[in-house]
Image 1 (cartoon, each protein chain N blue to C red):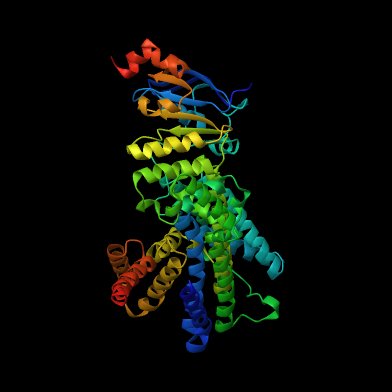
Image 2 (image 1 turned 135 degrees about the vertical axis):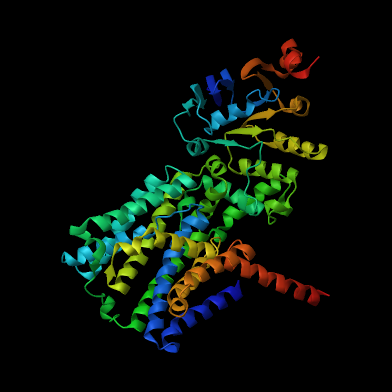
Length: 246
Length: 318
């Protein structure tokens, strides 16, 4: 079976500093993969290389067998890639609904229409509200991002990504900075995402995401140190050494 | 929403009535000039306000459209073919300029548009055999659209008003359209927009072409009004002035640049006849507006209006 996402020998240096060293990983369709590693391990850099925010020095990134590296970011998105950001990059003055509508527009031919009123596109707004309801923000659809809490913004990030019905979803620390209750909410939400969506999730705090992961990749100083099933990685002494501490 | 429509209709009617109320030809002509500059500023604002791209070369489209129209008319083309080809040519140049300027963003974009504007100015100034150099070129006569004579001050004003209204309507639709939303998204979060599947570069290029198209229309009106084009009309100062009109009136709004164009054109033409230091007055206006209404006059007045209304609403509620 073709992997949903296949990264081969990916290298990226920032000046003299190698951020990603010969990283290879392959995620099967429907898999829930967790990428863990201490600060500066190159987790977000890996995402940036996959999405095209950064260009690697060498290597290959394939989505369902198709090479992505020559493609600009937006075309990778059209192939079924979506991501959320660790540092929130939303549209603060706009309503939550409008934020999701922008996500929907990104994959719709309508985005080039200069004549119709966007506000008249009922189906876009209905779909956007559904996506917001899915993450528990249904009642907040008409509030602006600036009026929402950090936890709500994180969930908006998820709504925007899920609304695009991606094939491969990259989540960059979706649990960071959330309260216990909010975390539980996001975890429930993730468990309800259908299996035709492959999810790769970065998490700094391993414990909070452990239940979610089927396979885990441990990055350290830009290198894959350990990879395997949840049990294997947790049991591996190298995991203890670099990540969990003694 | 309903009140906005009423205000728009009232302002529209007042604009139609201008030549009936003001009989002085000087002021009617001035009103035509205001409209031409307002169109230039509104079209530039597609880039500035909605796209977040500061261009210092927008005046070049006045030059490109005007010179092209003059040269085509002189070459024996009729009024309508000259006008059409001139706008096509000028917009195509806009497409090319967009390709070059959008290599960069921010200050880089500004500098490239500045350079392109200066190149157009330089060609107009130095290519004596074609452009007449510093002496400029005369446009033989105003067209007679549908056989209607627009040589008089009032009829030309109405002609300009119709073109302006059509342009404003189109630009308004653009700002409310899905494309307009994408353009504003690309201004605020280009990286995120890419990650949502938007082609940010192409969005900005299309906006650049739209802006240059309406800028070219304003340029054509300019040469119809003056029946003359010279490098002076496309100097850096002109481009900067249009930019200031948009900023003064409020670049975040559709109508702001119109207000800016009214104020700057009036101060330049009316106050200057009474008051030698009109430039200082303009400067003072800028300082005051920037201090008290940093987002421009229209957003500033809107804010004041809401502040004035808010306590009343509370009173009524109580």
